[in-house]
Amino acid sequence: MSTTTDPAMIDDDVPASAEQPAAARPKPAWWVKLIALAACLLTLWHVFASFLWIAPYSALREIPTQEVLAGYMLPMFGQSWSVFAPEPINGDYHFNVRAVIEEDGEEIETGWVSATDVELSMIRYNLFPPRAGIQSSEVASGQMNAYNKLNEKQQAVAALDFAKDDGEAWMRRTFEELEGSDNPDPTAYMAEEHLATAYATQVAYAIWGADAVIKVQYRVSRQNVVPYAQRNDPNAQRPDPTFSTTGWRLPIEEEGQNRGNFADVFRTQFERTQK
Image (cartoon, rainbow, N blue to C red; front, side, top):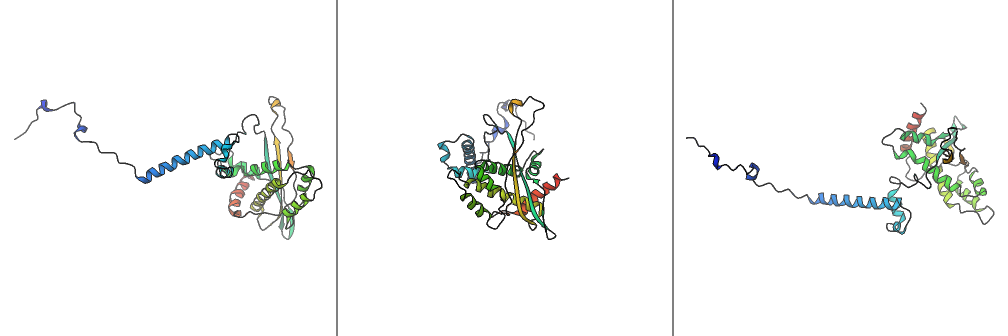
């Protein structure tokens, strides 16, 4: 016996999906909410910290304190308005290194190596440039800025060789023994000197080997771009570079530095630039 359905009994206005109630959307787990909250808070902090870092100095910077802010922004998120007027970046810094090495029982003075050229080759034509590509430029900038705040007598001290066991202490004593009461405080320069020597040490170890290097010397230079007033002159030349003159130093290594990791990155790139 067959059964048929009367077409008049079919309600065309009711969709088939309405015949069954829709399943309730499950609520997110507690740990998903926690991760979302943490991500929101981190984003808000990053935006706030970036604003404080980029904006001109104000009392707001003391909310997290300057030390906390600098510790978060540097070295990965550091930025500034220095690409804009009224004082945009208008020059290039270079950091060059040479060393005295021992080879077959003799002390040999190497030629200069531009650490800056090696590092810039890491970021040139690179869509994902590494942070390592600008380290020497930052070291050079800090050293020269501090050097330029010294007077002539102090700059003459920086140009001397301090390649003995107590080189830094010897340099400090020499600064203190200078005559005159108007000598600028060399503390800031000594900090930059220490950093520059430590960086030069890593470069020298990477290129010539830690066992061979006896002492190092670095040379910082800055060359300005063509002056704005001469920008349309096809024959305009960049001004001659200026140098901060420093002498020979004993190698310095900071606690926690890994000469092997530095050498793996720097020497590999150095060898590529020599091909």
